Image 1 (cartoon, rainbow, N blue to C red):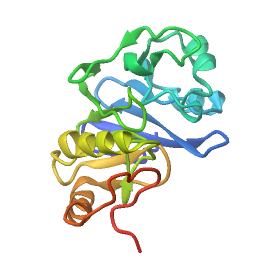
Image 2: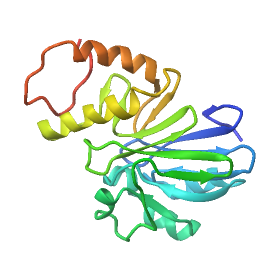
Image 3: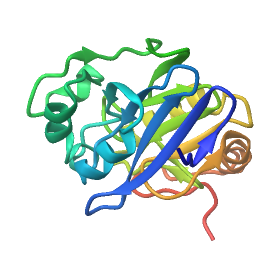
Image 4: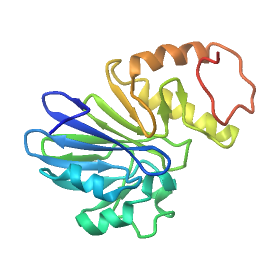
Length: 213
């Protein structure tokens, strides 16, 4: 199996899928072969093909935007495994989730313990999943900035989430976002420190980057 990222205990497969080029991730426990899927953007057949040879346990959803759940119902039906999402984002799903995630919960996949981090801002129920040295961050944080927000309150919330839940992780932690390429906590911590040291408009929100050109 070809992993996009791996260490001794876990392998991560990155798939860029659907009409919005959204990333889905398959996290595999190397010891047991158990796996989970993070987000279901589209192309259910491709996801199922990549899960072959593993034992899928859960579908975890970072947030309820359509570009992250487009293939959810098809995958849920085909795989017959529980769907998990934070309750604040559960109302947008066509069917009720099997598991309502709470901040600080753990999801066991083989020998891996996946930690749930509630990181509101992009949506009220946005959630990141920490699997060892890999953070599946949805649309909460990207290389160079936070996810999009629609109000100043949303921007303040996402910055608070990033400061308190993500930038406190070890610098070498990989951030694997919902779109585009990966980054690491240490790099984002330095960029954010520069951003935080500068004045900003009180109504700042939208597509924000830490260090404008």
